[in-house]
Length: 603
Image 1: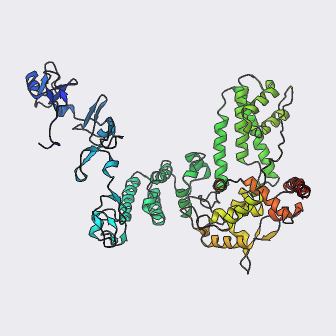
Image 2: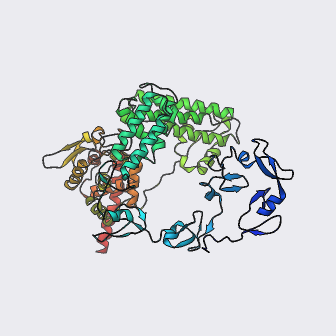
Image 3: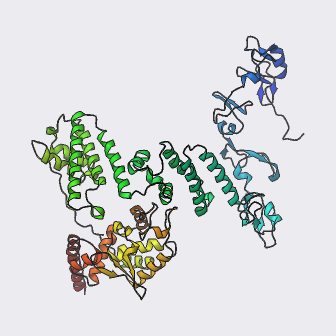
């Protein structure tokens, strides 16, 4: 007899002890063979439907059909008229049964798996894991699928069965009539994902009540699919839909959405995650274009409101609110004196940091103090020791206490002066090595190298580099570029100009809903109309094991060695402050004298 169909006794009848491959019936977790089942039960009509059924003495007279009516799978919640697995908590459907069973060891490799199955074509008569089943499979060079090899084409490639029929020729899609990658016999990969996205879009649009938002979402998916391909937006489809669903939940009309509304809907970090759909809505005039600084201010206000409601002790809560009013007054003072736009100081992010640190300090103070007069220097020092990273942000609160509150003794944040570390500058060998790497980049690392060169050769910080604009560049007749980094316009090095020209030719916007000509920043970011994030530049530097501070210091050092010995020249050329230029040059001069003295003494 075929081993596959041979019945091997696996369980014992709980009534007569007879071995059997499978219980004929189970009552109260006890299995019965066929003979015991008919001997121990009697036929009675079902109390619900009236059909005859067999029950044990004293059992409930309900047939199997009525017992299983409305039964749900404990994993997926679907109706289960016929259970594939019964466990203590309920039953499982055939699709979910394998996930609730105990993993079994593969007889070939011994690995535990929930997905054991037979494969008679490959000679596996016993259930084995997927890895063992596919050991003899190949990744077909024509269709790219992992399939069983069927033969060799005329050009010597081992392919699957479907591609062998075509003899390795390109697959022509019956649906669209174009050459492409095979997904099935009836369609290519592009057609499959296009139909899949159309189906998901249709289901999603049915959940949106406002017609203008439903039409906007449909247009958004269509435009994004045309730019990136349907397959690329599948992983982010739900996130995109949540943006439109959130607007739909408030019944907004086009033009009614403001920065306050967006901050209330999506929170402090929401628009960063929804930058692509928001950029699409702005591009097509469905939402007003809101500057990034206004959105940032609204987000910071939300954070500040959360911080104000964090403290539960009355005197600390009142003191924190008073400090918050003081910070807003200082901010208005800066604005009234002309510190606005790109020159603005004491921004909302600064207020949030000072407010959060003050809240943490007062939370610790409330454990030992019952009024502001009991706050002393020991408590402040203890806070700084426990949170050294907040030593600077606590200064604003300390000044507020010393000037605006009556303390028995003034508080003071200790100032610790740090000397410049020994490895502040790049060595000459490392400096030359980085120059060779960044002056000879490939197409992938072109932008990365250009950013690093601007920092290394021209002393630009990360913040200034990402904020360079296309309108600030001027190309001369000889092909070199002029740029205003400080107070005077300088000409970039010829090699750097060549890299810049090559980058501008292939410059692209990172935002999916933006063209490169719409963004004036030299290095566009992922948000519409914004520049590259500073975190991206930090990632570039980490790849080469350098820091922005070390590049900045090295730029001044090697500029000094190149003949720029006057601070005012550095200020005009690189755009740094007078104090910074004097600080570094005063530090560089002794180092150079020491090196010269060593060379003389060694000579």
